[in-house]
Each structure stands twice: as C-alpha cells, then as structure tokens.
Length: 259
Image (cartoon, rainbow, N blue to C red; front, side, top):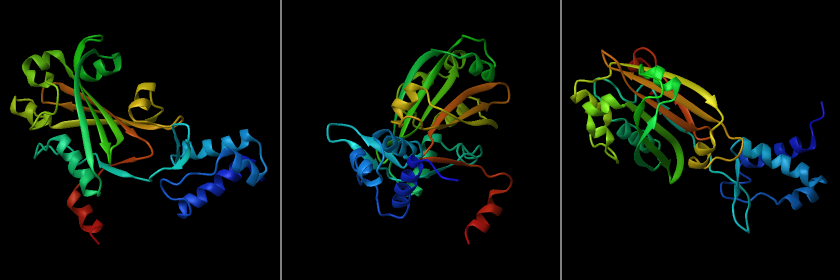
C-alpha cells in the first residue's frame, strides 16, 4: 500500500526527531524547503507538519521569523491512587509539587476563586440542585514554566458557608483536604471518572495547546460519610501527562518496581 506523500514526509521528519537528528528547539525545514526537497505542493508540505503538530512532536513558533520547532518531549506521571492519601491527608497541591520534583522538573501553580453556576452533570455528581451556585477554586499548574494541567474544584455554597476559607483566593496552607477534615468533613471515599476529549477553546488557550491536541479529563468526586463535598475537574495536557493507578497493596508493587 502506497502512503500519501504527506505521510511519507511526516514519517521522515518523525524519524529525525525520534533519533535525535532534530532536537528540542531545532527548527524544521520551511514549507518552501520541504516543497523543494520532496517535490510536493505547499498544501502537501503543510499537511505533513500538521500530522506532527497533532502528535505533539512540533509546535508553531509565533512571530515574523516563526516556523515549526521541535517540542521538548516531557512526560509526567500522575499517581492518581497516591495523591490525597486518606490516612495522611496529604495536601493535594503539595503532593503534586513533590511528584513533579521527584521526576526532575520544576513545578509552579497559580490559584484563583470564582462563584459560578454548577453545570447539570456536576450538580448531579455533588447531589445538589441543578443551576445552584458553587465556589470554584481554579489551579493552573506549570512544569518548567509550561502549562501542564488545569484543575477546577467545585464546592457547593452551603459547604462554603460552613468552611468559609474555601472562598479565599490563593493557596490554602494545609490544603483543602486537610482543612475539610479538620471541620469534620474527611473524605474516606473518592470516585474518579477519566476520559479523553478535545479541549474547549478556553482550555486550549490556558494550556497553550496546538490545534487538534487532545486532553485527558479526570473528574474526582470526594465523599464524606454523609455527602459529596467537592468535585475536582482536572484537564491534563495530552502530550505531557499520563495517569497511573495502583490497585491493592502498593508495597507489593514497590517491591518489584525497585529491582
């Protein structure tokens, strides 16, 4: 089976990237250079680079002297079953910071708080009336200065009246998990719902995603003994992140992974 010309060009460029001939930060040949080298039209050259953009291997550099540049291939592992470990009530933001630092990268994050109307799906997960209000604590997380994930955590307003600190902007020193536990709202049960999706325009802007780049969407509902207390919606940049779960005794897994 003969591949389309744009696929052959994409395969050639991909091989150069994977083998290190083209390294992170290197510029790709221009469309005109690709046209001359492979004897193709501009549309074919453009289709070839579009394949690599969608794969997260290259990105467009803005500006008059812009073009296509090889992206740094950074993959972060988020240990979903270890973050917010219930016995230790480890603050989630600290858990994420330590996770990134253990992988040799530099984390940073910005917080903000707004009051918004719960979408029907979120209201159902939290067990409250549709169209009711909630506090939304937003965290934009970056790795080496580059956006990595977004997290919007929704708290019903009646809960915020009980724990008003949830409405304060900025990070909460002990973390919201510990704060809620101190107020009698520990979360002994968590439910995760993970799916792949295309980002909304706002998500694509905040994560600085190239067109056609997918995201991983994780909805984590935290339950106290009596109610759902929060819904954390995390949007992971697809090319950067993977999510790992451990089921059963983690010490057994660590024993074999240490070899």
